Image (cartoon, one colour):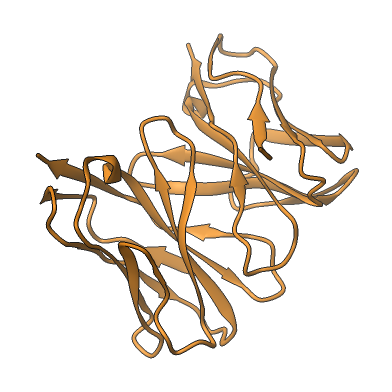
Length: 114
Length: 113
């Protein structure tokens, strides 16, 4: 079974500092996609960043970057220069090639301290 | 601005009632999904649909059914609501390419009393 594990239910960071959210996944597939979603208090899920498993280069989107370790099945999210607007639930998700279903982790609640 | 719209933000229903949660997307997406979100469990897939009148069970379909009569609308039905179905329900749609994620609605928080 495909599973996604986020081992940190809650994290907090000082404004302007850097924080890393962890995610591991279990799969026997070789071709898949990984995502980080943000869910602010408004509840609207927003795609933060995506990574194709066949790409060795880690994806980056402005202050957001990932550390993708395929052999270790690890996909962590780094947020640099944290801002108050980054406070949200963050979900890691996985989708295999040819499938429509996204498998989500349990989520990490990120708090930004001013 | 393209979007997925869920008809109710908050809903309170009584045990045993038949409940309809409605979701409409304006992006002409083939695929639509219903997830349930619970603290500590993340999002779990209830049902999805890849075409009109087509549906497939997700990971937790028990107690739920779905209807997709038109491409833009995907309904989740609780045949006889129970208190353990109190949860946040999220609808999403996607266009198909796996590198694309989903577009989500804002969720319906359902309380069954």
